[in-house]
Length: 336
Image (cartoon, rainbow, N blue to C red; front, side, top):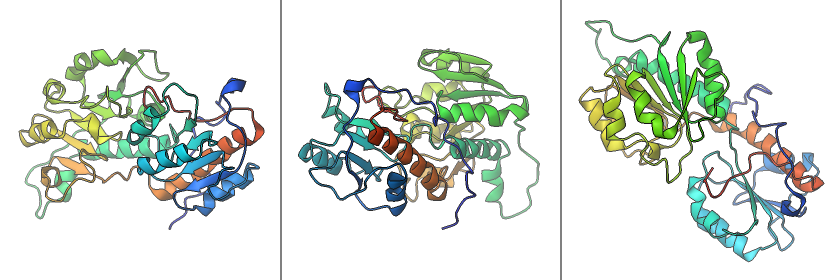
């Protein structure tokens, strides 16, 4: 495995934690890394003054290094009621809704995730997909003979709509600044996001799409955001607009997107995530000349591991010290 340069990426939430009320703070104790051991995470726990140990009745924290297997985690929590803190490995926690539901009405356990942690590599990938799609690289890269005509669009001075206002969106605004684009953020609250030219609420999405040249999906996947981009939204886009999704596949209605691409009603799509995922062999998107699919590789293990180890170290320190300054706390009711 190729190791990235030390400090290559930064956690945008580091240093921003607010202490939990004393009654909501989990009790310190041994921490189990599950469902498989990860030496780097044990090292992070030790570096924070914590004690990594096998699962037992004494376990008070769990670092869960699996993007799925929720039923297994739920059983562990039910049979080990002393566990007060669980660290999940990715920013998207939609696969754990049933586990959250089992503890509704309680403050146990405290859930933390990799929320905003991978913002830099994912935003970088979103920019790459945007440029590749505008420049028609999916089509050009599949060519087997010299193209008879030149085609492609420039990103400079375009209108970019970013759906979502988390760490990825904030980092994208910085990356897009040199291109002199006009940016619109679509978010639930409508609170202005620093660096954006305009911020609107989610119910205004359809109204901003007709003027969009680029639409980048960077929102959380929840019951409310499923198929946020469907047939009506795709129909609202101009024929020269491109769609980029680096969030979760469920936010885009796949069949509607296939139809829009096939009929050339939009200029192209860059997808790091799909619905279903993995995308089956033979799916129309694989052979669609206006689409590029990158198989959920916006943040690779080489990029993720150092960032996640540091998040584990910070949250272990919050557990061990008892100060309750956890980073990336999950709102289990909202699902992110």
